[in-house]
Image 1 (cartoon, rainbow, N blue to C red):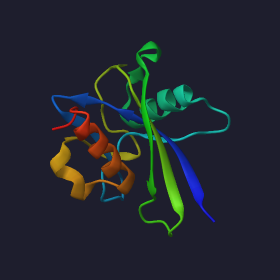
Image 2: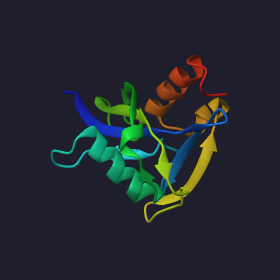
Image 3: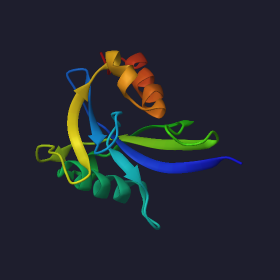
Image 4: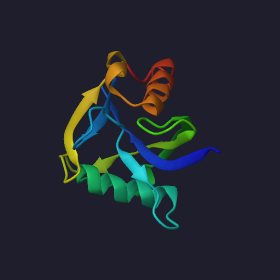
Length: 133
């Protein structure tokens, strides 16, 4: 049986690099975001997760859908799929590490070896769209 993990993520690109985070105790970088709680909308999930992880406030009217991507979940048994619904958005503030985030880093397409499986698919899409160097 396939299990899907429903996640919402922020795609923030500057100068051809994408904002990525590394959680405490993990060795891979992830695009910031997280799981939906209760009956949250995509927008509500994005705003809450990014506030929790990066301590910045998303500007709701700047939120724009980019795409939905699926891949096997890292470190989980086969058949556990991460479904990542990605949005781009502007925010107020400067990203800084929170309780759960050990490091914030701007990555580019050469960093595929240090990111999760679903992020590899997203990086490839962004590179093909000319957004990522």
